[in-house]
Amino acid sequence: MLNNLPFIVVVILMALGLYALLFKRNLIKIVMGIHVLGSGVDLFLIELGYRTGGIAPIFTMAPRLEMVLPTPQALTLTSIVINLAVVALMLSFIILIYQHYGSIDSKKRRLKG
Image (cartoon, rainbow, N blue to C red; front, side):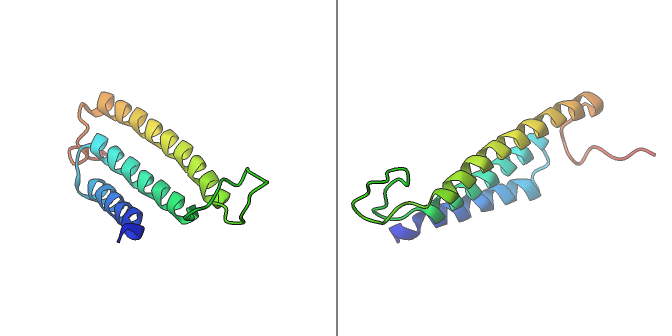
């Protein structure tokens, strides 16, 4: 059971992120849901590269050959930076939406033609 705990946490984080993304009306809560969803993906990538008893791949004089995979760690660092940039951009768009419409409720804005 404890071996599957990180995957259970990943499922919970992704479910919470999708819930906020699909069912919330406040734009800031939607952005928070996207960030939680990205954190679930990051945890999933880290868990894929983990090995019990593994050592860091930068230590070349390793007594045993079990090393932690470096590729998921690099992908996770990239994902963290991209997630941060996306959240910052979305929050700046929310500021512009609030200045233009006076509300951050996603249901109150309608296209005017």
